[in-house]
Length: 322
View 1 (tube, rainbow, N blue to C red):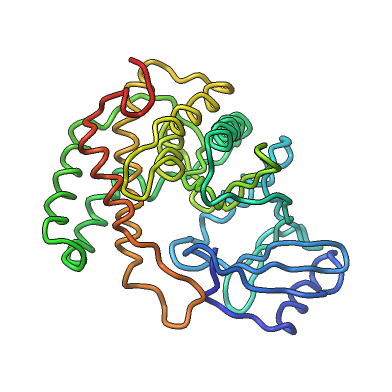
View 2 (cartoon, rainbow, N blue to C red):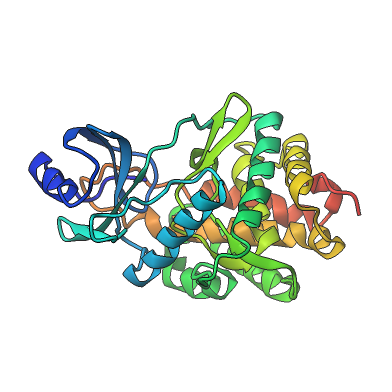
């Protein structure tokens, strides 16, 4: 989440007038994240989150994202529910941008989750996969493996801003991913961006998942690999095995991994680290001046890639048994 496009009180009031959500009481921008412009909104009838879609989000993808959230909410999974205007539309325009307003969810994220929250997040991810299993729409993962080498080629010159050997190491990783990427693993709808700031807790209990704007159809275990990278590494890039083991156990409480998925998890984790390294590299010099957002340092994920490179697929290094 972030703010790239500002709005005024009169613009927001006119937007809300097409909904049955009551008159505007207050609103404020949300600074976290890097993708869209987001605002907390309070009306006479409650609290909501307003999103103006920017940057990578394609308008053609929005029916998938919004439809998925309504599907999950109808299933009983705790995710934001897009509100419909009086004409039944979930998607409108505000200040020249596609915009939607969704229900506000209670709970709090934890920037430094321990083992119990990692376990709960794993359980929540398995429930998300189950809830989305019969969602009828499909969307390819536009930031999946096929995109990584072209994305690197477009931004490889930026590697020199960090370390002299970074470009060569990333090329080595891309070659290793091409050689070992698994095929024919169970797939379905995944979140693809379930970082700690996209999960809310009630104590140590999983309370909600938010920010579904990278959701897509891909390998289910890749979603778990994204979470291992996002939740279970120390600042120097090392994987905290006790956190990884807790997250995997939590996930398997709802959906046991197949032997093939367990064997593939290290290379999936290396791929997930590559995906976030590359998008952070692309964002590093591209944030608009004056935006209420701070880009993430790609070297955080370069450190994770170094761990995966050194681990070389050793299951024990990921808290797994063969």
